[in-house]
Figure 1 (spheres, rainbow, N blue to C red):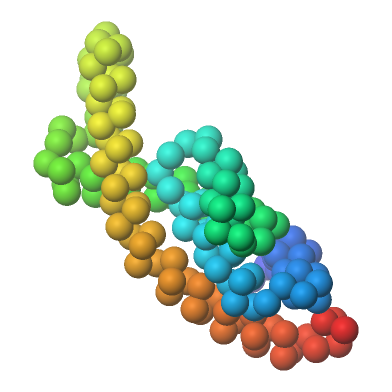
Figure 2: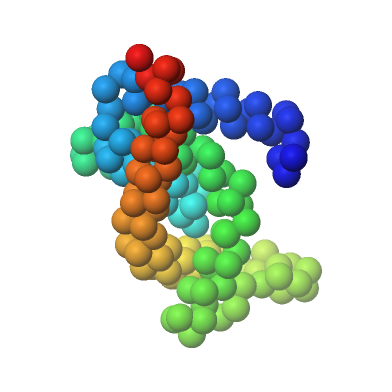
Amino acid sequence: MLVPAPIREFIRCRLLRPLLRLLRGGVSPRRLAWSLALGIVIGINPSVGLTTLVVVMLAWILGLNQIASQIGAHAVAPIHLLLFIPFIELGVHLFHTRRLPLSRQQIEHLSHHPWGLIRDIWQWEWHALVVWGLIAAVMMPLLALYIRRGLVLLMRRHRTLLR
């Protein structure tokens, strides 16, 4: 047992069962895979507080499944937090800008200059979004491909649940 029972049960109840219900409801594995991939890719973007709204709008514009897109976005929330600083650091390196202040002295210095802090935060965020966009453009089709394969296997394994 690599995964503890409570986590396995959470995944089964919160991820697999809703996805099986969508498949049983007539959503194609391809459309479901693209919906999940969209949610996952948007879910790891380095912006804070916009994920749900962006997923709703993009899934609606692209004609994808809203529920699956939200499941994908919320399933990667812990990864979003882990990737936030690396996206900013990659943006700093890509655009050769001032490094992210991580020491107490650097943060205190910026707190005395609020306009400079706001400018720096917007610059770091914009650069991080560019890095994320480049990564997302490559990752979304790959994710959709592998998720579709996984969904087809899931459908074969749980044929009785799909009827």
